[in-house]
Image 1 (cartoon, rainbow, N blue to C red):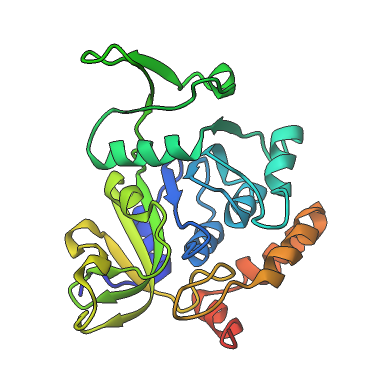
Image 2: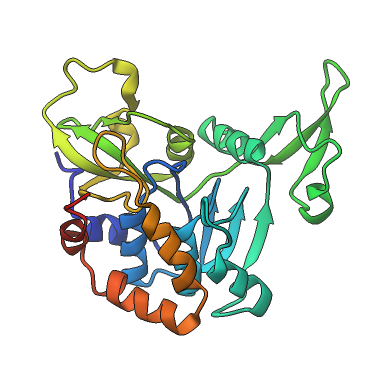
Length: 281
């Protein structure tokens, strides 16, 4: 399996400064380890796309790696604000960022359009909403068949999409069990796809074939990173670390505390160290 390479190599070979990148996972299977590797490598001027930016994007923004965020909800799930993102927006610290806000439905449709190779997504939405007043990317078109006015937005076409999954087989097919967000669509919309997995197995014998979310020919690189979604959860492997999300609210509220936390927990932590720290999960 030539696609199975260390995470640092997968990031270095596939993501460049200035790229548009998506790290997708909906509460479940959020690719934190991949995001941490991007931070360690200092890959900057990124346009971050994500349906629900949470603490991994807060960390990347706080480290000054993002120039733009395209999103549909930003927050520390179940806790509150993304304080580093807010500091960047309100105070330009550590740098100013551009934000483009959409609804969840719009983000999902934009990924679908990108996966289909279309230039835009057309859907019912935004009627009576205020987002079109502040987001110039939200347009309207008239259906040529019914005369109905519909919303239209640009398709998402990331340079790279990162996701986390439970398993890959020896061919490089990727399997996801449990809650699936827009990982498949985000991957198929991207030019390159990097998947971190808990393990590689010989085959998926005995498992329903529909669990194979991504066939091997859609995947650029696979890296085995046990615990790669922590502090989010991986169904069948470990639970959500709610304490970590609560801790992040305190850490991210203070610039100096944030800097020290990142030095201690990300900049000095290899994927192997990361996995060792969460063995008890």
